[in-house]
Length: 409
Image (cartoon, rainbow, N blue to C red; front, side, top):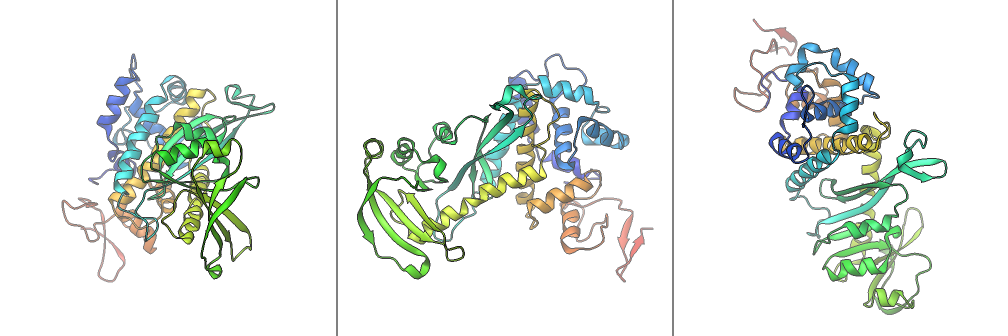
């Protein structure tokens, strides 16, 4: 993988560039472009995401600081902020959205063998949204409130590997429940949602498609108990009931029975009431499934902290959408690299290492291993053989038998 290449080049080599070229051709992204094609735009924006650049001027200055390495990173020449700004404004953002979806499909195949709970083989999704606040005077197209602008990122997260399987970016006024209309239900899959998604017409649609759901009940739920199963209160499960809806419209919207599980959190003493159409699983499994929904909250927190989706390099809708989708693709790319190389480091650690080593000519594996075990960074071939992953020919440094760094003769 590494033959004297920079770490950034190694990451970019993991991308399916032939697929990217076909997508660019479909949307005529490089039509009448002579000096700055879509591939270079993507590389520049990916560099900005990996190194936490704050502005176009910041991107330009950092890349100009290493002019001898630009060609090896995939750039034909220096990246100018005006050129990058124009590309973000006018290149169709759907190029990067579709490319991110291709990477998502690839990552989901890699993580398909992982399981969330030991006794559960179903695919488990967590559905939620996050709001990205914007300045109304700079982003008037993203009107949210009278004094505020925002975009909303609706995400369906595959909890095997925390890979987003569906993302929809809308204005801030779109209610969360409408995201259910955009999903194609997967038979046998489990959808975990908070009570903002409780709409019995849409939930019954999931049920009819053979999918399962776990959500929380609203306080004004009008229903009666049909049957109560025996529970062990020491586990925290207070009640496990089969219920029927009593509301005039709700019993028409969802005409079959539901399962209601009442759980008391032993740590906080808070009582939670869950609704589901799963009847075969133990009540504690229902509680654990809803608890796993927190992973999507952590996903939103992670990408807001470690990717550039709160500060934007352009103010047009196309520029914002381009930046968000490239940020998502970079997140998925790091997850793919982590799985392919069987790295034990977390995504947080990988992003931190990549942010300061993109210009280094060392293999990803050796750089991560040096970070995890706390050893001194050495650009050597420790444990590597010619032709193996991470081997570096002509390395100027090695370690002596005493463990101190020496100079290769």
